Image (cartoon, rainbow, N blue to C red; front, side, top):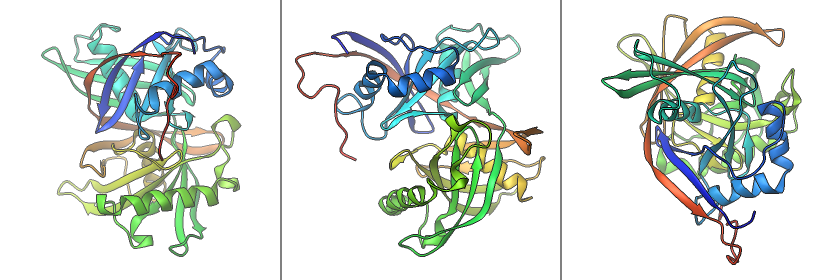
Length: 339
């Protein structure tokens, strides 16, 4: 892209970064956000902007962000293209929580006097809602209302260098494989992170060419996006299910949060297997100790199968603003990643 300045506002949700580009300096063409994602993947200018803002020295291998776009229609406030170091994703719950917070804090949407402001957002996988809770003029939390989520396959055998492991495959705006970390003799702890990254890449590689990686209704949503490794921590005193997870997504990228769309897919698996009742919450911790609460909002039918609409609750906090420069004389432009 030519020399230009790019403004961003940065947030983190549960420790996971989200870099918001409210006014992308490139054309992102398409009649819907899903179409714009297809365009962005193939367009050198849009993808170059992604790399500039995500790659070192302006970002890092675990950076994440989004380009604000027009919505699909007047039913949403805006649209967003989510991006990471390897491309453009179909869903992002932690990003939706950050975007809801940003929309209220920036004044993009007027705060509802009831204390709950709904921010409707079009994403490549559909329409989602951030229910932003405010008190005394401050954002106190956000409920991410996901697209419908459902299991795709249960107890799939996956050969790995750690032996065979069993995976549940589920959709929550993106397709995830769910694997107990203990199946490989590991735990969701920082000391095992390098091994979990390697194993996540391995599992994704095995499953990516399988029928389990296909979305049943829209091939643009196909592909194993991430592998969710989880530890089962039992129930808390109130009877809610308590788990800890780390999601290894894209090509070895690590979600510091409990993963919003991954948590949505986790709710679908646990609801379908009877482990998460409609009157209970999933208390979902991340590898850095941050926490989401999730539950089933309602049961629906989508793509000819039983599904749930999950609600994932968390908080996002602004970390700063940036004015990035693209210098045509910079021999390292648009940047690099080392992992």
